[in-house]
Length: 262
Image 1 (cartoon, rainbow, N blue to C red):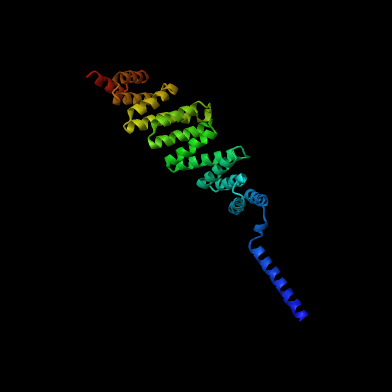
Image 2: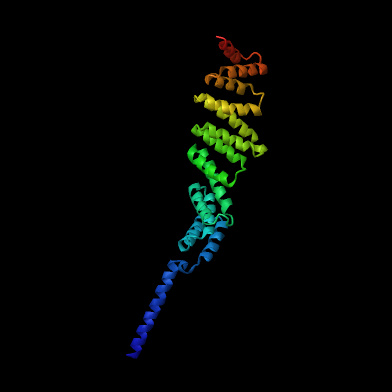
């Protein structure tokens, strides 16, 4: 009887060990991992560019501690690498909310917002682009190219006054590489505003443009037309005279001037 009882206890013990070993193997031992050990594993996978596997590790960190802001930073980095801007922004914003001064938080958040803004602009999703770029510029207020993209996004929605402000803000940043594109944005915006039946918005944009390029005959001609459509005939007259100073034989300017006297 003693031997039978001993064998029974031994069998139960062996069975328990086998079951525990099986369960631990199935779970990958994650039940015993700490947030710190999972972060180390996730970072190794991230730097090895195994982004999906890294994401799983960082999500495990958050499952154990949803205030672990560095896990959100690395989740954002993984999604940036995958060009998944919605998830990148979501996780970077969460990190920023938890620890705005934390390591790499602002750079990751800024990169996600900028990438999301550029991607939305490229797809002509102008309101989304505006939202991302405005938020980005709160973090990086001296980025001239972000102002350029923001101005273009505003033009896409017909918000010409906001576009003008964005282009002018960009021009104050002293970025010589973006300067010509910002100036061109003023001309493009003025031309578009006029074609869309908003001559007063066109005047604002084109006036700023000709301040930077006072020898552009086409810009002055468009500005003159904008004044004409806005009913500002004296300003139109003076602008068409400027066109004739640049090109004395310009037929369009002459036609408007002849019409002015009628």
